[in-house]
Image 1 (cartoon, protein in one colour):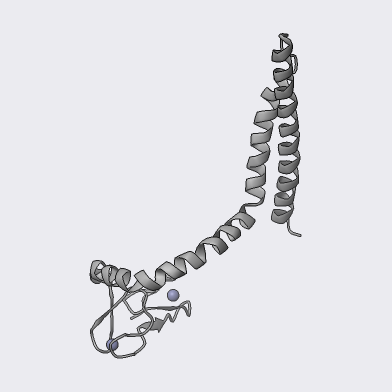
Image 2 (tube, rainbow, N blue to C red):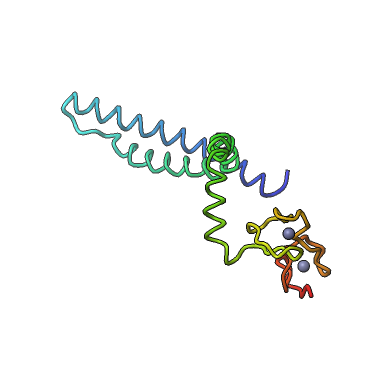
Length: 155
Ligand SMILES: [Zn+2]
Ligand SMILES: [Zn+2]
């Protein structure tokens, strides 16, 4: 377990502990307030709620920070199928619009001179490779004067 993982584990445990304690304090304070109101006396444990609620909030914040990766993974799992499904229907439309909007920055095929969508790896008109291997960093980058990855001169 590396340091980052340990910090997150501490955050999770401390967060849960604080949230549970805070909630317990808040409930105790709240219950006392209700009971006191019923009796017509001044609530003595009201301050517990004042401590409990912020403690609960901080605890939840710790939890959220500690579980951020799990949460984001969960959210991703939840949203990806929906996006994919919608994407199947709207992708052609979007790429047509994006293609028109981005035509100024579209990838021009060095073989046939026709335009391709930004980031395309192969020409959709002639099938030739649109990327070049950077001699400096070895990355596959779109053909141009400079490497998109490291800035080295390509020609
Ligand atoms: Zn081409
Ligand atoms: Zn490079």
